[in-house]
Length: 288
Image (tube, rainbow, N blue to C red):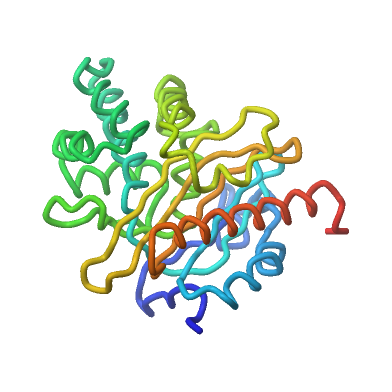
């Protein structure tokens, strides 16, 4: 049995899943320390209880991130870095939109066409075209830093699918799209969310399995990549779902599935269990 999650490199970048300062307050001009705002409630224990059984019988590594949009409660299960595969396309589009904002312009017709194909149909040629437009890995990394991501690093030599990321960082990316206070403007955030809500039928798997059909439904982007060195699959899914009357940001990253379909099954089971357990806890059904 493989252990769940990767171990972080000893000197690798780290951040708490909830973000925020690690100190005991912020120094003010008068020398006194301001009391920091309360941190979001952590879902770590809830996720561990829900997902430990999956990890115990899974032959693949996986990590899950979840944030409740109503309360701000947040948690990450598992750790380490994963290849993004095509979920990086959300970051590519965010970088393009930040560039357009900085230049005070709308997207061109060609950029719109590439964005639509890249997000709704996961078109790789469109992604490669936009990757070049944003300046490749350097442009992606710069955009990610503006959006609060510090553990994601663009793939080298044009291989955007080999961008490395963590579940915590992908939650930050989703938050920059679906919550206020982002460097992305309102139109940019709405544009990304609209495309993620109109994915082609053959793309509608993944964290969407956790949605219960109420509210705003789901918005998602999936990624999958067979690794030539191992013959195993990376299968990932990120997005926003509604369940139990609550909206959630959900990330599931995985590595090491023998086939794509087994990777999809793992991602969907992890998403369903994480959202169901969190909904029960937050709605008071589990005494949490």
